[in-house]
Amino acid sequence: MKENAHVTFYESVLSSFDKAAALTDLPKGMLAQIRECNSIYQMRFPVKIGNTYEVIEAYRVQHSQHRNPTKGGIRFSHLVGQEEVMALATLMTFKCALVDVPFGGAKGGVKISPRNYTPDQLEKITRRYTTELIRKNFIGPGLDVPAPDYGTGPREMAWILDTYNTFKVGDIDGLACVTGKPITQGGIRGRTEATGRGVYYGLRELLLQKDEMSELGLSPGISGKRLVIQGLGNVGSYTGTISQEEGGAIIVGVSEMEGTIYNKDGIDIVKLMRFRRDTGSIMNFPGTTALANREDWVSLDCDILVPAALESQIHQGNAHSIKAKIIAEAANGPVTSKAEEILLEMGVVILPDMYLNAGGVTVSYFEWLKNLSHMRFGRMEKRFNQNTYSSLVDLVAKTTGKVIGEKERNLIARGADEIDLVRSGLEETMISSFYQIKDVKTKRKKIKDYRVAAFITALDKIASDYTNMGIFP
Ligand code: GLU
Image 1 (cartoon, rainbow, N blue to C red):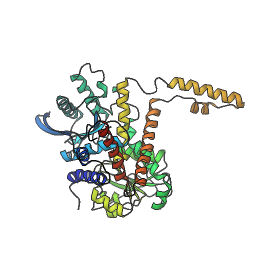
Image 2 (image 1 turned 180 degrees about the horizontal axis):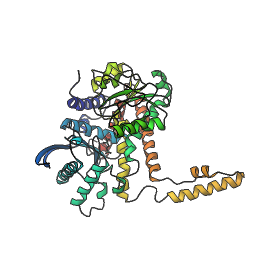
Image 3 (image 1 turned 60 degrees about the vertical axis):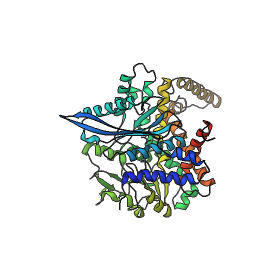
Image 4 (image 1 turned 45 degrees about the vertical axis):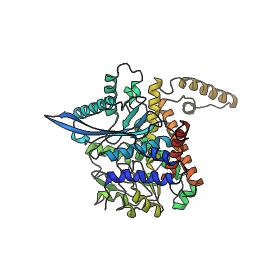
């Protein structure tokens, strides 16, 4: 039996929080403050669609202002509801703290199904939503900074920025009011792929843990591991592509709205995405078999399940059928707390959303910094480094008497571009955060799983912020 997705999602988040909180000795009052959503803005506004007015239901929830601005994406989906946005905003607080992104958590949602509207209509809705946020001081470079989420992307962020700038003429830091923008509108290279790339780095790190892999009966390393991906949106498509191209993983199954396909020898994800663009569907992709029931992606034979769509996809009704040894939570909240109990009992390792999909907000932080510094990363040092490395190559060639070819020279004697720096910052963040969580998990004997360990790692940081502020000393 499938639980009610929305209520369960928020309850799941709170139940993980409570489990983690019980294992700390933080003051009760402080824990109570950290647990709650601080500000909830529920709005209704009319938008003329064709000949009629539609009343649009939308939200922005700021979970915690222990750091400012607050940060989190905006979701466009017909499933949006207040509790869902509260759950997502709560997760953002812990996600940011965990990966040392100095923001509080927030999230927005507009209850519409984007596919039912034309781009012009979506623009109207997005601009009106932004106006409502401006009216209530729920957006601004130092207040609350939205970003893409399910159903939104760079295009919507450009509309948000333009609306903000229209109302806040002369705000020199206006570009930093939203992240995930197109490069031409103050965006940063590497933001679009960031969540998927972060999922890859995080998963790769877990797979390098020899002790844990041997307990799971897996060989160490991502190469050759069999993945099943649910959802080929922004996160799923980049996770799949990068895991396949850079990691040598094998994508054996893909699930989308139109159905689920499987090939035990692997599906070329790059070709599959081209196929889907051309035909509008993943079904009938050469060499694959279609499952009779789309939802059976959960029980496919594989090493790693990557839910990269919406919350509550793995629930107590299907958790028992899982054959994978690892669940990589690319989506937010894909496993309900009831399902988690079953899976932990079964010995399945879950890499939690709050850690694994934090790459998006990490690169959003880089974009925000870029906007506030009014300069592209790498602009100052690129040429200097290139010249220095070039002299070094010359020196090595001269002292060894060896000829260094053009190809090798180009590899060594180059300064970092923005994309190199963004990827490097992201990789460092994902690796160091992994070991922070693992450290907590290993040292505190009562902690058995990565989610509770991640919550505690984040909680400790938030608590020390409150303490440093002189609140709850
Ligand atoms: N929506 C993304 C998330 O859930 C990104 C948020 C951001 O970049 O602010 O983490």
